[in-house]
Amino acid sequence: MELTAEQEAIIRSTGPIKINAVAGSGKTTTIIEYAKARPKSSRILYLAFNKSVRLEAIRKFEAAGLSNVQVETAHSLAYKHIVYKSNYVVRKQAYQTHEIAALLKIKGTGEKHTEYVLANHISKFIAYFCNSTKQKVQELNYLDVVSDAKAQLFVKQHYAYILQQTRQLLGKMDSGEIEITHDFYLKKFQLLNPQLNYDYILFDEGQDASPAMLALFFRQQATKVIVGDTHQQIYGWRYAVNSLEQADYTTFQLSNSFRYPTAIAQLATSILSWKSLIGPYKAIAIKGFGHSKQQQVKAIIARTNLGLLAEAIDYMSRRKSLKKVYFEGNFNSYTYADEGASLYDILNLSNGNRKMIKDALIKEMRSMEDLEHYIEQTEDMQLGMMIEIVKDYGNAIPRILKDIREKQVEKDDKAKAEIIFSTVHRCKGMEYDVVQLVNDFITEEKLQKLKNDGTNTIPISKINEEINLLYVAVTRTKNVLHIPETLLPKDFPDFEQIKVIPVITEENKQKGEPEPKKGPPVYVPNYKELATTKTYTVATAREKNTAAYKTWSDEADLELAELYAKGFGIRELARHFGRSTSAIKLRITKLNLTD
Image (cartoon, rainbow, N blue to C red; front, side):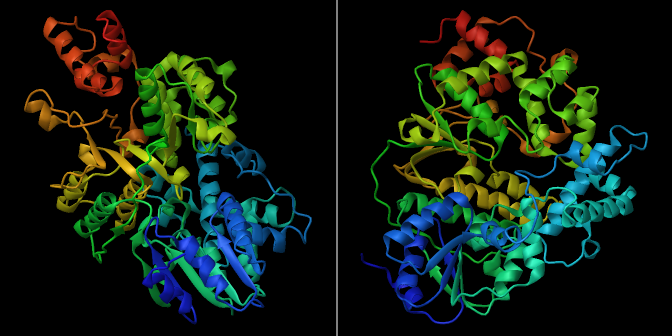
């Protein structure tokens, strides 16, 4: 295999180094060649980002004949040092809010479900501490990671109690009184400050390292190599930090991508340049050398679960012939929140069917208003998104989910799927022949507004991460990209591999009928507003959608027929006409517009 000059320089290097590798630049190949060039007697540790990456890395190192390389994740390494040598019992998942409230015997204060709001913040405080470098919980200020004004007010009022109970729950885990979490034993591993018996430690995906694991890594005596992409940091919500920016090591670049062509490389470079709108940014030039012509593996990628689920429903309703689909991370993961509540629970709460609710937290809510109040005080965006889906699809949800599940194939049959659906986080590290983006990512227009808004309080790091999410999504393709026109950089040139999706906007509404370019449109959710949406009723629906209950005119029917024929989706049409998705579907059927 012929290596590039950049790769050769890395392989010949000595001492601690950091490698900034763009998406698709062959960093795993480079690391394998680096390991090959070290003495066979060397003891080498390769730290992978997650279990699936670890298994793939084990296969690749074995195929290269490198028996002296041990492949671990941060958690598998910590597990061997902590759990194997103790009587701890590890939970499969973090404690849910209602479990924490029961374990700590938290009592309400008279406000709506205060005990659960408190438990939610205790859970988040534990995650914040376990991923930090601090020795004690009280060395952290939990308010630093609470951004919503209402949630901040609640936490300030109850800070002493939240801190006390956070320490108490951690103490129960430490003593073995209750099961421990994965975050807990990783933190305990970091606090032990062990010296690992390796000559070289290769830390992959360094841009998403937890501060706890990074601190442990820096303290090792081995020759250290950090590999990652500064612009692929997308786990800030898990308190990840960018080790490439913190490591004072000799820097090497892998700027040539062998995954995608020049068109995608230029688009990726242009999207990353948006960072200059909000703060200092050192420009990079990504080179694309991919030459794949395959269009067999196709994927639709969204920023949020809501955006993806809405697009999947719309996409499959317009393509009745679709037989097999696949969801990265399993479809059920898109219908359940991390806390355990399902769409069915939210739907049953909305319908007043309390006996049908399975999740303990949702069962405690007396109404949708109660749940939305809880969301406002906890910043639980997942539940907020699920409420939006229930509002949009209502009692059609069971049938819709049943239809999707009947077409879903298992992981072993992923290659048979006609289309793959995924959020950015679930497809990180993966690649597809053709990618279509859902229009729920940040746009250049929104960034310009933030730049011009003197009252903007959103941290630059969070805005940069939103740009990173779009960059990661764009660079999953090996060949063709279908992208909503609102996501394209201003004045971006035309390329054969980039198909532009038309979107109905206020601007082109004023100009008259929108002129689509290529490809089908997608729904545009505003994920930043999902958690603050007020209670949805028939009355508010009539007030919001003034045209929703009017008789269809001949002009409206003609416009609907023309837009539908051009490929606009149900949800996009519903927003355009100010009607419900059900009303649009009924009218399409009435006009015999379907095949």
